[in-house]
Image 1 (cartoon, rainbow, N blue to C red):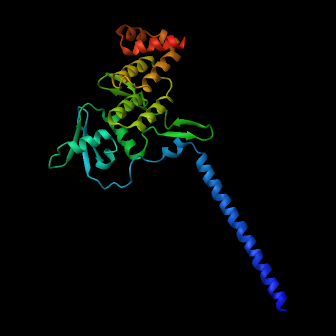
Image 2: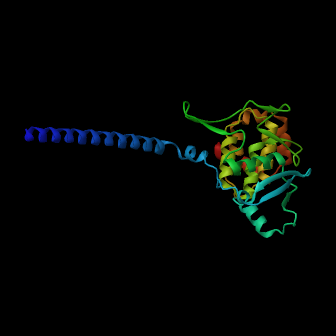
Image 3: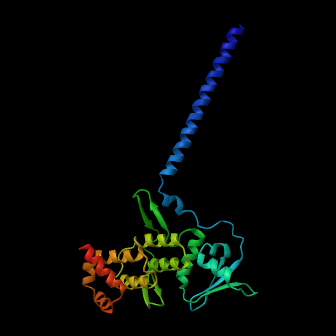
Length: 261
């Protein structure tokens, strides 16, 4: 009697052990699959949603006066200091007793708003999304327009006309020491299409005027863009006027076209 009871207990214990091991194996297998799926995601996707700043927003508030009209912005000092430029300004500037204030008279408010949005959120509007079904990047709300002007362009006071917004943001990121923002702006600009020849040329001139000669990304982007669209540019009167004005842009373009041919 005792023997049969003991065997029954052992059998039950053995069955439970096998069930527990099987469950643990399935749990580990599920965890491994989740880990593998996360690892398979492109690094750019994994980092895209992460903000470049710490979520601890307890530092002092700094007021920024932007542009000739002195449009006011406010930002946390710790957030601004993720830019080496603003870190240097905050450490070296004597602030008035009524508060901390930075003046950027030559900056465009719309561009600085995008830079500030990036510092807080890791992206700027229109946001960059990865389409898993098509396995490609795309921009949100690419059909939006403001006052009849495409959202891809911005009116710049130094140019007196529209230029590509991502180009201006790229150059601002160059000034503020934000290499990740430069990469993001260049990626977004590569997704733009249907840009007028005059806008491309004025944007290219702005890029050459506001990037160092060592820049090998944005300048090369414009050279490749003009070469790909050379048939359209040949019919453009704007191209002729720009070439007659000359400049480093067209010397580099000539060299690039010779290499291309």
